[in-house]
Length: 538
Image 1 (cartoon, rainbow, N blue to C red):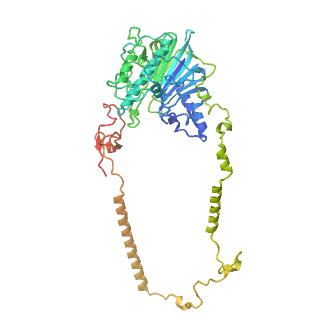
Image 2 (image 1 turned 45 degrees about the vertical axis):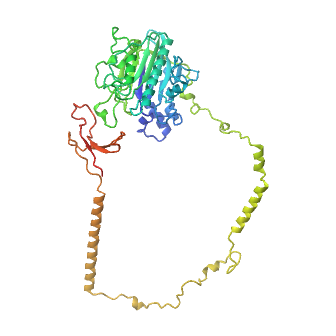
Image 3 (image 1 turned 60 degrees about the vertical axis):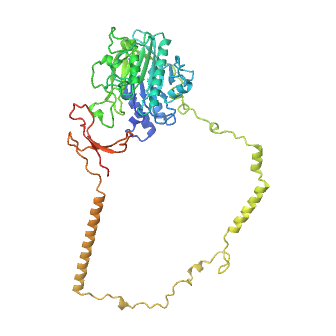
């Protein structure tokens, strides 16, 4: 059996934050190893790793028992990125970064790029510069004993910000490039058929193509007779009505149902093939509203595959909502095939990166031979006459500015120690002062009335000081009384939570109150109510 898992991890270091260890390096390696062991998959595809090569550490990249492959964003740090971890028993025969082929090294690449004449070189580099695609090719053996090729594409599709129309263009061009590469890979094995209009019953309910508002994105699989094509990607979330990405997906996928008489499109959603009527099958939840607590989210991660591959080799397709660590949950599938590992990892493997290869770098690599100009060399060794004149003038100026000790009242040389014990002539003369006699220092005895008067006066002063302190305390309490108590929501009569408007507009930065309960279905009385109240400016 071959088990594949895809997970939008929302930062590869996020699930490791709760792990504590004396040695951070071994801690990261152990934590990442535990994550992979918990997923229990032969191939794990991660999206939105949010690491670049300069911050990737060896404990995250080199895990015992696995070989890993990374695609990094080349424009922004902490953004996008995908990674594929393969067990040593599922080592790929080829691996490649990007969809266009411009990032390929011509050694150990997957190949089959298709006709990309519609794209300029600059556009292709821009589409591959965000680290959104990673291809691995595996040898597998079916239950019939036939050896076939499985091409897996780990893709993190771009999000189209409504306020940035250029991102929508970027997203659609990325989809077009993905489709061209998929068609080329299938055509290379003569297993591609013309794409027919499909009826996608699922939602790519984020920023891609969806048919309903309760599902979302994920793993994508292509296949046919003896060559299989597998793509893993999660789609971000956005409005699905009349979405160009949804229309593109409709043309790429067939309708649900694994029956032979159903609509014959090249790709289908494997989860809906096995669970066509399962409700609440969400893979992404809002962390701000706490919607995961009531399972109120979207299915943004899919296992989509070639119809022949899904029908012939898929045993199950599943979700793992119990796995925490991200706002997405893992999704995956089990194939009734066995992996045939390659004898050696492809050159893209992270174990071959110079920083992880274990080879010591010579210090000569950090030194550059500097060729000095003969004229400059001579001038540096032998200063000119003008320079020598300036140096002499500076030395003379320094000698003239040095402070010289005065000859009056002192002699050159070291002072005698007894000179510090002689009386100072400028000090005050105390020899003629009359000291008081002992009798005048004796305090006379006071009467009992004087003692009582002093006690009463002391008590009055203490009372006045206490009153003054209370006045000051009450004043500062009124001035620094803290925030006013939270209002109660109308649905549950519970304290609200304050939020801030972050959307650009006239209300940007304003505070408001809303129900503190997690978001859920409107029919659920335990979910958040519709209470809303603007906060008064202080």
